[in-house]
Length: 322
Image (cartoon, rainbow, N blue to C red; front, side, top):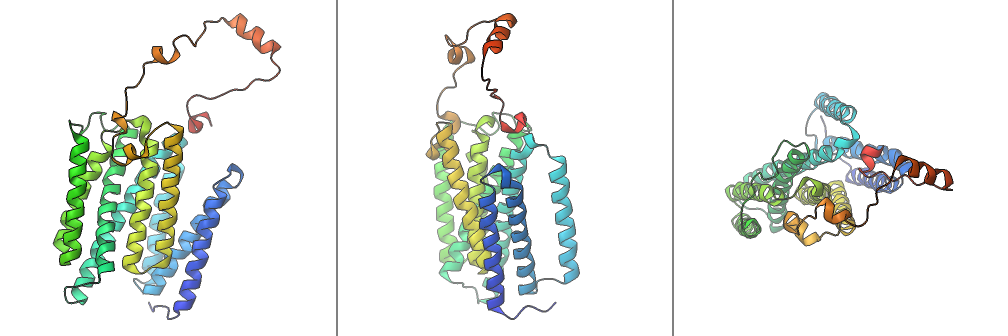
């Protein structure tokens, strides 16, 4: 398959794809336009993928078609079979796949660049590679833990131990040192060691967090996956990947901030995996003590008969309420 030889045309198509991403996000801000926004963003992603494959002449048209059929089929099956109440788990898996893709692509590009560049690469390239490996590995393993906890496949005390916050801090510091070694020595070996330590960090960051707080964690991991994708975009010099990763990273951190504020949580505690230790959870008696009054069916019927307006407030979340 021959590559396209018009950088201007490629950049114009990338700009169109990025515009579709932005329009899609805009559509998701209102329930009436959410479905249309999702479709618009999906069209932008399809356009970006096709143009990238054709531009780089990576594989033949038959392979591209086969990949679209397999990937589209898996996505369709997942979308049909997964219930609305399981959507957080589904999103967690998506985040994880994005993270591991960034790790593998960055590693492959790093190895190729070291081979063609005589064992050295530019500072920007190596920094972006280290960032992709660190953030991507944390995202992948953290997302798997989030999925396992929401699906109740992992126990609440899985991989929870004393002084875990301090150990997480040590793992993060070690990851920074390994990132420096990766950049300073242009070493593929140090890169994979960095990914290994970051994987452990991803596990220990999320395991102390309870299932009720997982939606906030998933939003944060979504932001991480976007940052990893943007870093990979700098490695591949792919503008649309940088733009889409930045959009996901920014929107994810904004959503995390909004959810933390609504749940009276600290964003710092979320980032360092300390939400579960943020405070004692009050019992039901403490929460409702002195606020709940006993009643009878007759009294409820009388109140409803004289009421002018009745507001029904579901107490189990929007997904289940639907």
